[in-house]
Image (cartoon, rainbow, N blue to C red):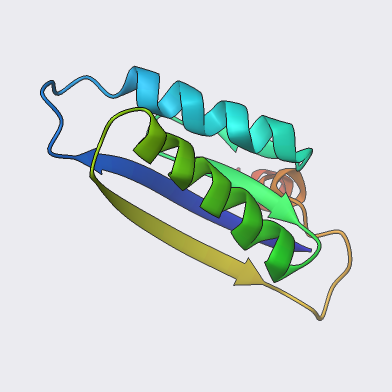
Length: 101
């Protein structure tokens, strides 16, 4: 299972508000069918292959361009762990929650 955390930031827009860009990007991720979690600062996503992951993020970035910006800054962090099965986003959180006192 590959998990990733990414943020797509439109640059050079007329306004500091980004919610419409975020909405468009998240809708594209939703269309991919991949499991995702929206956070206050980024989106986390699960994929079986790098191709699936990068395809979904590429499409999300493209809709931000189509929404009216000419420059996009995208940050992607990828965890491609192959020594364990089923290392989903929820499983990773549960591991830490189980050891918290």
